[in-house]
Each structure stands twice: as structure tokens, then as C-alpha cells.
Image 1 (cartoon, rainbow, N blue to C red):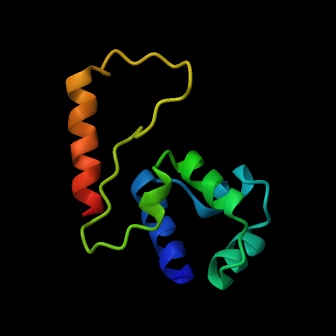
Image 2 (tube, rainbow, N blue to C red):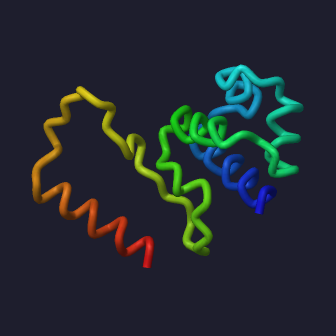
Length: 104
């Protein structure tokens, strides 16, 4: 599973044209420590959360096991206090329905 996690992270990095080395730098971890932690499954969960935040993906997408391709919106979350004119009740209901479908 850990190598699965690393391959998902690598896929997202490639899709976002983000480098693994830059990710390690943003996490303030040596690259070898990040790789070792992902491969051995010993990486602290706070770093996995930070990876999701840096890559701007929902945390669950790093563990998604479906065979569907990784198709992640550019900004799948809203920071507290951030205003988004696209947040209508109908839009939120559509997003909730979409996530519920993914989880089934």
C-alpha cells in the first residue's frame, strides 16, 4: 500500500508538473527521508496531510483505490475565511453527490 501511496503522489506530481524534490523541500524533509518514509510506511500522518495540502488535493485522493484515473480539480477545498463566488447551494449539493458516488 505504501508504494501505492508513493505512486499516487508521483502521478499527481506529474499531472501538476511539480517536482518530487520541491515537494520534499516544502515539507522541510530530506528527499531520502520522504522516499524512505513513503516506501516503508513509516512517514508520519501529518506529512501525508501536508502533502495533500501542498498538492491541493483532498486527503482521501491519496488513498483512493479505484481503477479510475486520477482526475483532481485544481482547488478541491476552500480555506477558512476564503470567499468563493461559485459556492451556491446547488453547486455544493452537486459536489456532495459526486463525492458520495466516488465513495460507493
